[in-house]
Amino acid sequence: QVQLVESGGALVHPGGSLRLSCAASKFAFDYGAIAWFRQAPGKEREGVSCISSSDNVPYYADSVKGRFTISRDDAKNTVYLQINNLKPEDTAVYYCAADPDYYCSGDGPDNPRDFTSWGQGTQVTVSS
Image (cartoon, rainbow, N blue to C red):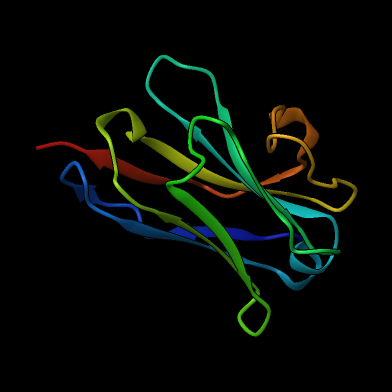
């Protein structure tokens, strides 16, 4: 059974940093891809970053390039999302998602329907 558990969300000031974690079951970690999405109040879920198990190449949406870094820790079956220089517009619930048949490419994940498993989300609030 696929399990994804996010953590690391918090209230931070603009310019601060956070590292979000997505602890995944072994199947989710070893096959396909794991992605990060975010959803702000009243907005659609937005894909921000993706990494495939086959090549560990990271992909990012244009809106977050240069500030977000996705990485994998094989020993812990965990995918991280490092977010630097946080902005108020980064405020959202951040979700990790997995799919055993997905391969990351282009500008990161763009369709939530491509992913079959989801975590419960972690809240990131950026405010002074």
